[in-house]
Amino acid sequence: MALTIAIANQKGGVGKTTTAVNLAASLAAAEKRTLLVDMDPQANACSGVGLDKASQEATVYHALLGQVSARDIRIRSNLDHLDILPANTDLIGAEIELVTAFAREVKLQGVLQDIAEDYDYIIIDCPPSLGLLTVNALTAADTVLIPLQCEFYAMEGLSQLMKTIRLIQKELNPRLSVKGILLTMFDVRNNLSHQVSEEIRNHFGGQVFRTVIPRNVRLSEAPSHGLPVLLYDIASRGATAYLELAKEIIDSGN
Ligand code: ADP
Ligand code: MG
Image 1 (tube, rainbow, N blue to C red):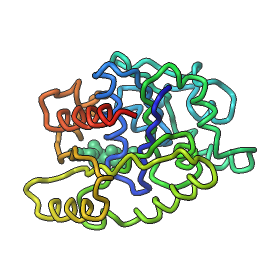
Image 2: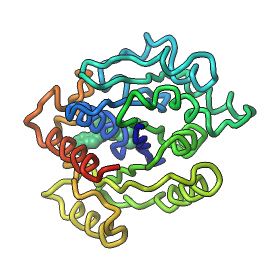
Image 3: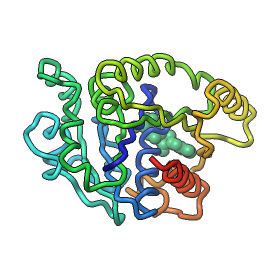
Image 4: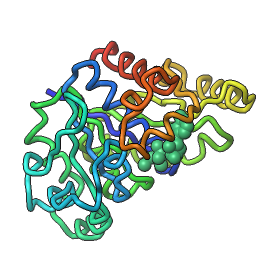
């Protein structure tokens, strides 16, 4: 059965999508059968693996509404072992259309149940909010990975996220764990990066991944070529870091 990891943080621009795409690609490169689920109406994870978001007809939105199954919408990526459940801007509507639906928080869980046995890992890219889409992701997940940008205010909003996670554990998904906090956009030459990283490690100890993602221009260039960084520049520090993160997750063994 797959291990389902939600990549969540309600702050935008902290590296959720970059992490979802490149962790998923790195797991696939390690020959783990991996599914990348795009739960953000901006569909940046789709473009990150070269899918044209405008041309997706059936998406995760239609699956959440029960109109299609996950099998109908999944797409092979340009990397062996990596499939995608695509999104597009329709997904904005799901936040509203699901409000009155029965069991609206467990829709994604139901969608993924159908295909979970086909995968070793399911990686869910969340939108930058704690709305119904993120709640669905956290309810479907076994564990949550929280990217934190190594900048001032990194921890702002974190207590709200932790509160949401505790609430979901209590009400909807008792098996949800916090896999860890991932430090992203770390800049070795910047004192603040070191300070923030130290502060977060002091505060969260063993809950912080050993792997740190450096600020690396290759990571920001790769999506414009529709490629995960390991297909764009395998020798880059960004590619190395995400391969290391995948290894850390595989080695942690669950
Ligand atoms: P989120 O999904 O949390 O909004 P993104 O992953 O889209 O964040 O990242 C925000 C921006 O920062 C994007 O332009 C992305 O290419 C860039 N970025 C993310 N991680 C890195 C990194 N480690 N080094 C350099 N640029 C990065
Ligand atoms: Mg994103």
